[in-house]
Length: 137
Image (tube, rainbow, N blue to C red; front, side, top):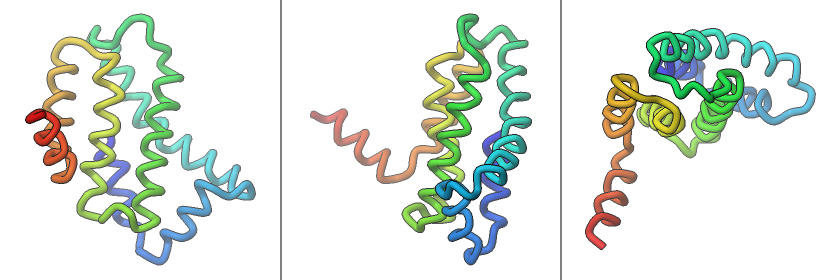
């Protein structure tokens, strides 16, 4: 689910990054932003429904609230990338890591195990180094 969103972002030429920042920040872009949110929501909602159908989503979770949280994380990561603070090569890992951290708190079973594996694999090198340094203290 996150991979498809990242592929779309990476396909955007560099000169579109400024409009992307405007899309996420400008009041005038509310209608366009709503369209982008709807497009992202479909794939994310299907993934959440799949986890719920597998019985691996905590029963108390409001799927719409989870969906909004995942979209917000993806939007924040896209903004970080569009502003140049996140390299193209790190976009997929950062988006995956953020989504996994959110989903780890509300999943069980095989989904939880797979999300933990994906989060560990998606950690950017500087995050891994900080984590090892913390573990030695």
